[in-house]
Length: 119
Image 1 (spheres, rainbow, N blue to C red):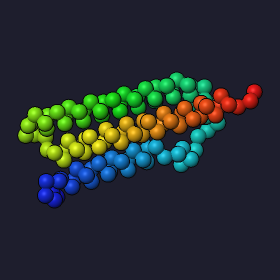
Image 2: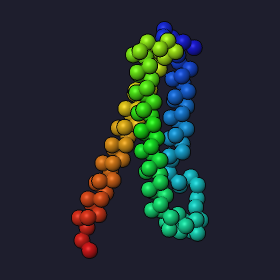
Image 3: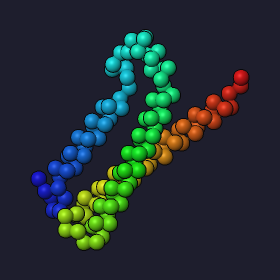
């Protein structure tokens, strides 16, 4: 369904993607983990955190680059790119960057708390 120049099916698809991402990010309490699996995760936790952080930063970078390219294509008059597509892409990249900044702030805060602890 299209309202004016906005394709609502794309918005509905984006909402479905957000719900799927939220379901994946839900706490692990829904999936009980055995003690041995927990110990294995703790041993490999450093490498997992590093790889997850790098992957997340790469994904944010990719979203930023894609939105920039889409905006440039729209500015150059590419008829295959609509204004709504460009604006949605720019908003996605903005939200991804804001999320990354918030995660960074939480990590810095946690680091400062750990450094302030007495030994």
